[in-house]
Length: 375
Image 1 (tube, rainbow, N blue to C red):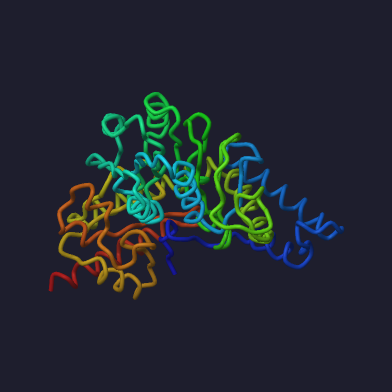
Image 2: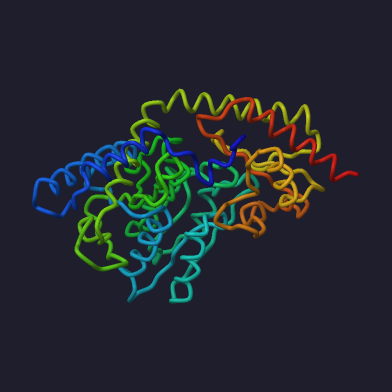
């Protein structure tokens, strides 16, 4: 089996699974309870918060646990909108965001907010010049990804954040760092970032746990109401087992950050070499600023059919975002790519456990599929 769809989700680390089981079976108290079991769970919760904060490059009190990256992004966008519900104002995002941002922004547009979607350049980057043209005095929010989930582009968030604060000082800056956590060193303060979304299942934690960085001093209204957990930002009994697993995954991934990055870089380089040698018709899409995501097209070979061919050889990849299943890639379309390339796109996404054998299996399966198309 060759799993190369790690941008969709990845294997749970054994140590993270052990941390979850320990929290479920040993320190299983409610963190809000005042007895010993509750206090033990509360201590585990706060220890985990400190570990995740270290990975996020922020203070523990700036970390709020959620169920996923989508929830974190919704709290950010809808919370900012609620703070500005009387004056409305402009919300700026991009054409190549994850569906969590795009669809939330579209909903806010129906509520009367002036929503602007910035177009990327041909490589998938949002330039400061494009942002500058869109900024107005009534801009209340800029939201963009750190790392694009389909083509691996890293946005110049430091430049964008600096420009935002210079031209619209009261506007908030939200970064979707779901694909960047433990792949890029996160420095929200350096980026002038106010809000940042991350997710656990992209780095080896179970599904069902995410986090939101909220800059110290900023207070957003909650989307839901309840017992006041997570300092009122996200009420509901905390999922301590998932949180403990998330912290363990962060700890392991950050401890091996440099060696993991070098390993994945070597795999991406090897993939591109093999593609050039064995698949001369293939075209790489985007610049792929990080090696973890490589997007390529095989013009004339439909993505959906190719995926089934690869699955037959136990090679698992995707054609784009797992959250936009069955739809044409809005990211590749925004890059201005012809339909022949958007319809034949394949996304390979690596994790530290991948090997050259996985790459070889992928290239061989695509080569076989391409021959079938040309019969």
